[in-house]
Image 1: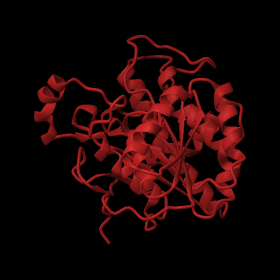
Image 2 (image 1 turned 90 degrees about the vertical axis):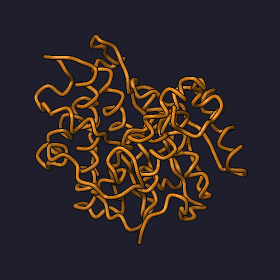
Image 3 (image 1 turned 180 degrees about the vertical axis):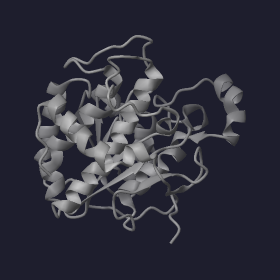
Image 4 (image 1 turned 60 degrees about the vertical axis):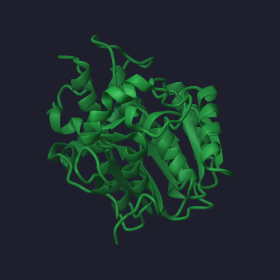
Length: 306
């Protein structure tokens, strides 16, 4: 059966947490999940921005069931507070690991806990959050973890011996590494959950080339000048708005036909309806997944027993 983003399955009674749910792709993922009747929790650094996003979602999804939790993925203390709160949820049907840095400094920066900023925010923080929230996911039948990959993994070759760019740094290289790790974690988590007999599915997705300038307008969320929208309209032939880029992520969270360990992205790579695709071999490698898991436990000081 063809998956139609315009006909999402009803999800009343289910709870999803979306990191970075107040802006960009995360906002549209949250809005689309809320449209199914699900309860959606926006995990955001700023509760003020999360409140603004909730207001916009309710304008477009009357009666939307929403909440927020404060989360700074570059700060282990913040992650622990958020993760411990999520672990207490009566049910957690989906954890969407969306938040991340997409542009950065020319110089290598570190998080509060001493990790390279982009990798620390885009991946290491999400590993710790998932480990902490795992009890709620594990006790919810049919729950899902959705990790966000990127086409940057095609463009940036993996250097598994320099994942935190200690020998060589550029933002794009670090960003690519963070997405190799996000993908590798997603595939490894699914393998481990299966081996442990857990009823938790992990699906990896990527949004293609998704731009604010091509997105449906949401005041205060993706404010772009009319001139910028007009200037970038020609890119519509090769790109899509973030409302459409959210579709593979939402499919990864909701499609009952997905069995886990799968990779969902736009049909035409950069844009299009969400379909199954193949990730780069380096990210999907079980050897990389096992090594990454060990490193992640060491980096976070958290043993993650699935």
